[in-house]
Length: 236
Image (cartoon, rainbow, N blue to C red):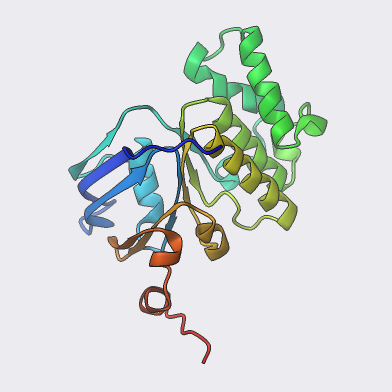
């Protein structure tokens, strides 16, 4: 059963952030419901990844505030990890426990059990001893997601976790996200996949660094919004 709350997990107020003089996000305000999945969508350059970076604490806003009660687990894209990194899949997932144990400390029996559960949940046990860089793109992204899940933070942030992956990898990732949400985790994912966004509980539509629409996916991903933001015209 999905655990939900009427209280927001994250509240963003009047956020302005950018890499140069021209801000990427301008006066951005939004809430992210606790215990639910929020999909963040918008065309390229709309500010989606910048927003995620601010929520993760990687980017500092020039103005505004981000209110959250707990540190998030941030799942990077597989392309952000070097192929030459000499680390196994199991060690990669084990690093997720550093949030609880600190780096380089011996894992407890509970830590190891969490790691094995995350590996099994994403069907990575057969490749757990392999080097991360030797995996396919889908396997590597699943390993990074398993690392995020191993943190057990209750707040999971993902930047296009299914982008460029085959159907089986996307299925496993979607199933893992639904499972962790059912356990009470708040999930926020940036996605270009409208079908994935429609499966979320909540949706934010960004365009030009501003919030265009927010609410249930079916209520905000309307033909009017699709045409105004993406230039997608409904078939006549």
